[in-house]
View 1 (tube, rainbow, N blue to C red):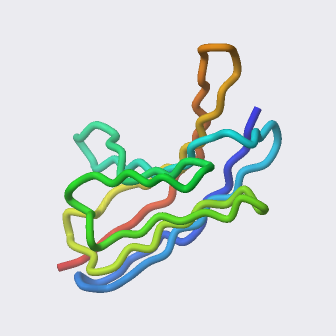
View 2 (cartoon, rainbow, N blue to C red):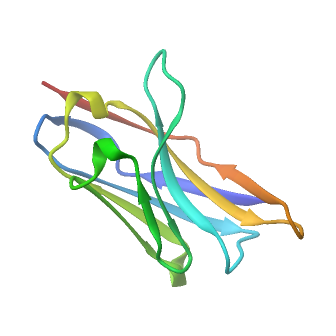
Length: 120
């Protein structure tokens, strides 16, 4: 099992910034993908951004140019710097850790989530 501990959510005004952090421990693996998903009330959980162990990043179009994902492999930690926040960024943000657990199998692990609320 992989345990994920998130921090950094909160309440911020539109145009403000927040930085989320997520530290992984337990059965981590050198090859992995770490990322952030978010879920607003009534909506499905969506990918915000992720980053592979080799540094390749992926962002949902709505956050490109505003959010930056990064990682510290030595500490198994992923960060999400969120700038120019908008009310539509409001939601619960979940850290995700994905690693191979078989020849063709990857497993997902989730944090408990941290709330981000952006007021207008």
